[in-house]
Image (cartoon, rainbow, N blue to C red):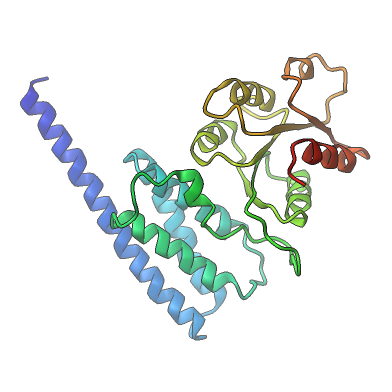
Length: 260
């Protein structure tokens, strides 16, 4: 392809990217109006949160396709937040959604320093809604759970939230690989057996990579202690066994990793 043709393609890509950012700004401004209406009691919580859910679904793939990694990560967190919001919303909902709007607007309008690390950015986002934490202080400790949806995942999430940790759940190991590199959580807990790429393989890869080797990783499993697959894990990766010993295994792992 000639230099002229390449230049035209770049121009077209830039134009499409700018059009997408304009669309994001427009939708966020509409969500801001919707949020204000909800704060003042003119719309129900469900009526407010549904357009946020639709916007997250609409933008998360496009943001990644245009190379807007910071925006894509924030949209993923918004999607996680609204998807798992409880039926009875806590009062913090309004301020949380406003924080998402403000940060995404700053990114879309170019008002946020592009050199800001994604890891620092996600720590400014609201913690995922869960059970009523009451007097539990939410600490600035990011925990990524790489586990399939289900009761076990909700149990582990609750245990982490009771420690005051900020928890995100990534149900796909391929997506988790990307998110780990970008957000650099303080702890990753991965299920040993996962679709596509086993959690054991993910743990081995993350421990081996310079970009992620300093992130503490634990593997949760129902495999027998002597299973040869667990023997592949580096010695520094603790194994949390499902069953009666899980609580003790978790406490010991957090203690050994200096997270409690």
